[in-house]
Amino acid sequence: MNLEILLATNNKHKLQEFREILSPHGIVVYDISDLNLKPREVIENGNTFKENALLKANSLKKLTSFPIIADDSGLEVEAMDNKPGIHTARYAEKMGGIGNAMDSIVNFLNDKNNRKARFVCDLVLLNVDEKPLYFEGTIEGEIAFEKHGEEGFGYDPIFIPNGKDVSFAVIGKEEKNQISHRAKALKKLLVYLRVK
Image 1 (cartoon, rainbow, N blue to C red):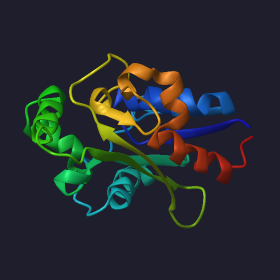
Image 2 (cartoon, rainbow, N blue to C red):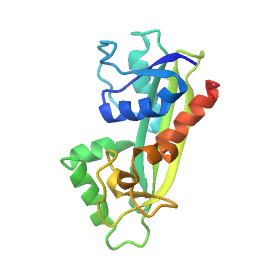
Image 3 (spheres, helix red, strand yellow):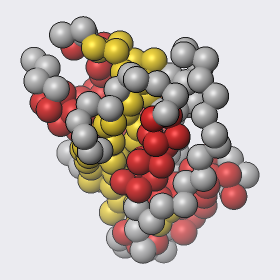
C-alpha cells in the first residue's frame, strides 16, 4: 500500500517514531512543516486524550485533503491519582523541563509501595471516513527508582514496561516501537487500513 498521511504535530521525536512504525507498511508520514501549513494554535482543553487528539486533528481539517492522524499521549501514575495524565506535557513545562518532571515523580514515589504506571495513546484518524475514527494503545509498567538510558524521549527514562527490567530509554527504539502505547494504537490503525 502507498498512502500519504499528515501527522498533526510539530514534535520531531514523535514524527520520527510514527515514520519508523508506519513507513515499512508503505505509508508516507508528513508533518505540518512538510506541507507548509499554518494551523491555528491548538488549546488542548479536552478532558480526555481522545478529545485532545481530535482538537489537534480538527485544526488541520480545513487546510488539507490528506488523511490526518493526531495523537494525545500521556503517563498515568497510579499513586498520583493517574496524573499527570492528559497534562503530561504541561506538567513538564510547569516543572521547568522533562528532567525536573521525572525527578519530581521519582521523588514523590520514594516512600510509596505502589509504583504502577502506564502510558496511554489515543489516536484519531480524519478525512478517511465520515466520522473521526479512534484507536487506543496502552502499556502497563512501573516507575523506576531513578532515570536510566539515553534512547527515546519524554518520560522514557523512568518507565519500565511490565516484563522488562530496564526503562524504555534503555531497551532502544526498535523494541520500543514493537510494544509501546503508540505502537499498539498504530497497529490498530494499520489493521483498519488493511495494511499487511
